[in-house]
Image 1 (cartoon, one colour):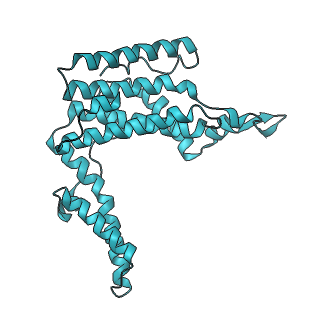
Image 2 (cartoon, rainbow, N blue to C red):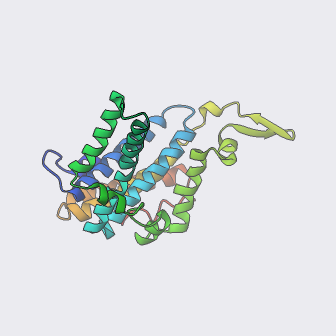
Image 3 (cartoon, one colour):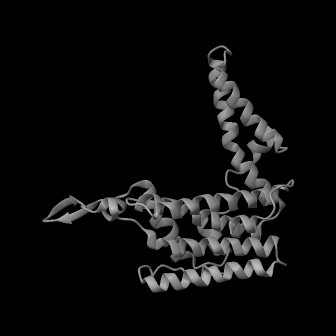
Length: 255
């Protein structure tokens, strides 16, 4: 479905189109990884970590569809290239400190970083002068796309972040139990997963797809209808399972 929404990929894309197609393919890769992990034991931590990536990418897609202009896409590219320039400058400084003798790997990395930047038509000054962030903070993006920001931020961003950072709550939910005034390792920790998160994740992805279709393929009613049917199926699955009825899936269906 993601590839269908992305459209034909065998012709030159504008910067705006390339950013959206790249985000859609990233979404496909990450969501597909979650689906694969859900079939395996001991997947609670990576699924939660990847769920945060799905939400961030989905929100970026919708925010750009709703509020992106030429300057926004320009900033998106330039802010991302800052790390390329930082890498090249660090390597060049190391080489200079050694008297100018560069290792082959260092030369290749510097050349690749500069080539990517210049191939996009940007100068070093463009990258230096660009803001570090191409858009507002994540919570502001959620508000800008009209989501139930406090709950969506809590369930899909803040809570999964605990699994990325390895906080105590993630350890307690996954590996460590409480017994007789002390702590023990869950006997079934390797069998614990969060496959029940899949309907919520799927709904978030579909919302991003719907926003992309509305922006880039507004005349394609069958494609939008297909996404809507998938959302209805996901909602029915989520309600039937009963596992996550308090997670705010509803309200994320349509942009």
